[in-house]
Image 1: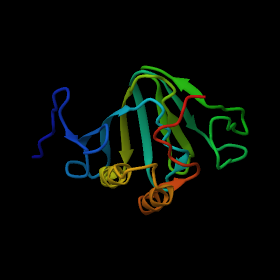
Image 2: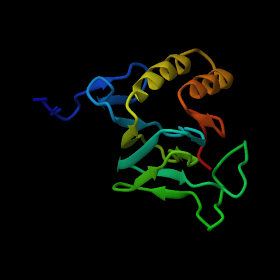
Image 3: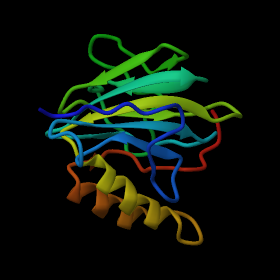
Amino acid sequence: MTSGLVLPPGAGHRIEGTSMTLKVGAGRSRVWSMFEAAVSPGFDVGAHLHREAEEVFYILDGELDLLAFEPLVRTADGWDAWESATGDKVVRGGPGSVMFVPAGCPHAFFNPGSAPVRMLFQVAPAGHERYLEELAELLAAPGPPDQAAIASLRARHDIHQLTPMNPGRRPV
């Protein structure tokens, strides 16, 4: 018989150099990884998609601008004004908002506020923690983020970058 896992609040594996805490990952699950995250003010993950992975984002505290659709036109300089063929636009989601992202769907999030946003983040298949650990190393380097290195890392992890990641973007 296999045992489950119960974690008290605040428990899990903190991914060094990030605001992400791994709750369940490839070491416990064959299917998915789950994280608790604090999204810093001004953090823009950049629009991207995964050919194989599916993701779910659940906002606990604060507000995020959310994108989860294929736009009529993909612009490389930003995703805020993207619109789908059916009229979908970027929305601002608050506590209790859920964003489901099927494989192949462009998506992004941005914290437009002045305080961190807390969210739960689940991704299938399991193992996304390896990408986050490598990303933390890149973002820890002095100076602005090396966009070419980030794009290369993302490509190795089934993340097809559509617009750049911007850890310190100013709210629009």
